[in-house]
Image (cartoon, rainbow, N blue to C red; front, side):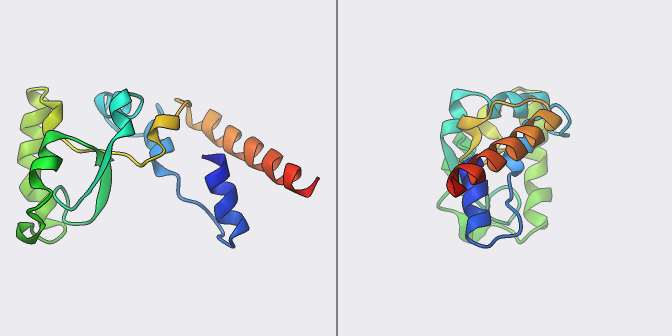
Length: 137
């Protein structure tokens, strides 16, 4: 993750988006199951899909994401698709059918290690600073 942040900064970015890492922390509003999924082996496999919101997003591959992958022309525009899928998501949570939910998460998920936002932020700052110091040496 740090190399990705450093690379973005070297290439001229003012910032880097690392949402998945913060989504997995105790302080996020993600469900406990979502956080558990981000730290699971299943997080190694992600899918890009518009099925859940109408906007393209990446999440941990699930049965429903696979089943809907070739039906994008039938999806409603954002935010209507979100409302349409909300009933499926609610029922899937109630019945603990995790393969019927897309848990948002990026390709960085298999590398996650911090569960506290403060620890994550400190690690990013320290490791990025060390990385840049090594480049100058």
